Image 1 (cartoon, rainbow, N blue to C red):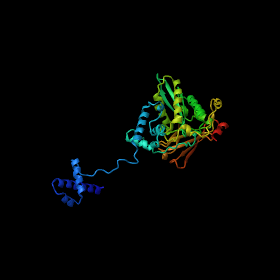
Image 2: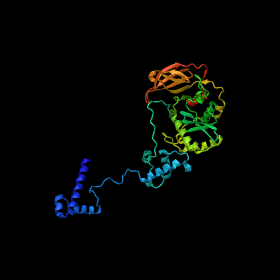
Image 3: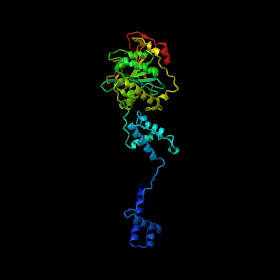
Image 4: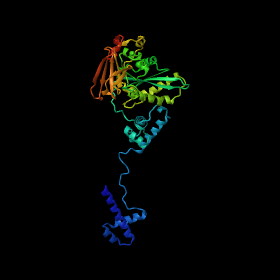
Length: 421
């Protein structure tokens, strides 16, 4: 680099000296012999100095003006135009669409994918992201957690369904409680709207989800009273009993950590931004019809983060076991306790304890700040505590404690046990 700069400066000095000698009246043959150059070279720079009086005689940049791998300007303009349209939400077909790279790529493929062959394929996600970042239209991502939290595996539809509640108010102050259940494999969703979030409404929502999405192997909940059964210790609530009756395992997420439930939290944010904030309701009964339209768009056209296709396409080819209406009518009331497993992921406190069914359980101070997996086997009436260092590591059984339930435990009915075989 330094040698290039020095050679450029030496060349500029020779050009300047040639022009100065020529202007001073020195014979051309003398200039040629002194500088070791051709006559045409001297005439060239004399003429150049006449056309550019303020020149410094330095060579210009030889960098190419066109780069073969550079994104064409027309593609960049299209990406930015699509981004602006998605942000404004003025196009009827884009009312519920997002504004990220995936949505832009999908709309780009719809609009320009079948035009002239010169247009080629739509830009990749990384290219779209780079265009948005270069034009200052990207938000800063949050930092990921460092402590490992174990998650259940969802390798097929209805392996795991996560449920959460989102609260909103309509004109006049009437409250709306929307229960959302997300299938973690396909990201398909079941939504119901209620006046409150009691256990009865939670059970009604689960019946609707199991009739439409199908019966899951594991149901994941946060620690709301409607799900956990209240604040009394050593009590198994009605909703948990309902899951055990249908042979479904139950998992409670860590206390106060909504990010563990990130698939349903992402849907809640999408639902609030793309659906709720774009409608104005005055009656609760007007919500379901508009919500069905939103869910139809979501299932057939929306591709969620970390997903390869729409929910409807991801569920194709799999056998879905939906709950028949006659089975719902035969649910016993009150519900007894059935054989099954109740899980919970908990963060060990500084004192070495965790909370399970509103009771303190000792794990040990050596695991403080880490997450453990607790499993209550209602048939054996024992509580097992497991620990996993990282996702690829083997599980370590830390403890197995007696956990008497104080009531008889019935076997799962055969027709429900066959669903999870």
